[in-house]
Length: 106
Length: 146
Ligand SMILES: Nc1ncnc2c1ncn2[C@@H]1O[C@H](COP(=O)(O)OP(=O)(O)OP(=O)(O)O)[C@@H](O)[C@H]1O
Ligand SMILES: [Mg+2]
Image 1 (cartoon, chains in turn cyan, green):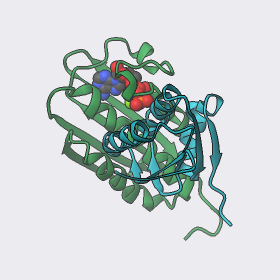
Image 2 (cartoon, rainbow over the protein chains, first blue to last red):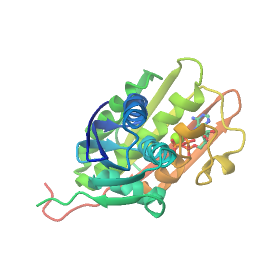
Image 3 (tube, rainbow over the protein chains, first blue to last red):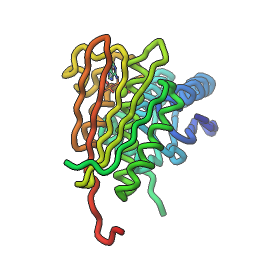
């Protein structure tokens, strides 16, 4: 799974693209980890708008990303989560520990 | 309950097959005219069951996963995902939310998600012999269908 990234004004934007399952998570995590190491962001936005599927492997990715960002002294926000992924997040109840917002279609 | 249709798939426990299993389940379930949300739930539950075989049942080897899908006359779908891997020593513990033997790559939410996204979940396992997970979901019959 590809993760495109850009760093702007101390904020790291991460955009995973495609299916965030166990297969995709392995690759995604390598990119995410190296981008956080490289930029040590104050703010990190994990933007999920291009995620076409997510299961519990994505929950582990969110939690691991949060841990890495926190360790670097920053804060993670998860944004633009599509409906299917949001159902998984709701079932896992992680919206209590990470700030998460849904994708709203205009 | 009368069975209307059935299909059995066998594939190797390679992570590339997670997407294959989801797509196959969605294609088979399409006969029941599910909503996008129902289809999403089924794909998610299948992904959890198949990933468990790949990650937990065959941790250091490649084994065979069997996925059997059946449709019944009450518009319900039953999916069984079976492996011949290491097995689960304590099923009740495995079903507990957040319980995982997988470290920080896993969240311990797979069974919880299968349970909440499907109507029924049944887990059978014999240590050293393998595990089978059977899930059932009734698809609502919508007005104006067909
Ligand atoms: N097919 C299986 N074979 C052997 N052990 C299994 C199998 N499926 C699940 N388990 C055991 O049950 C535990 C709980 O499974 P569950 O899917 O709920 O969480 P997880 O796989 O650890 O994490 P997640 O699904 O959130 O990525 C696993 O950690 C593992 O110990
Ligand atoms: Mg699991």
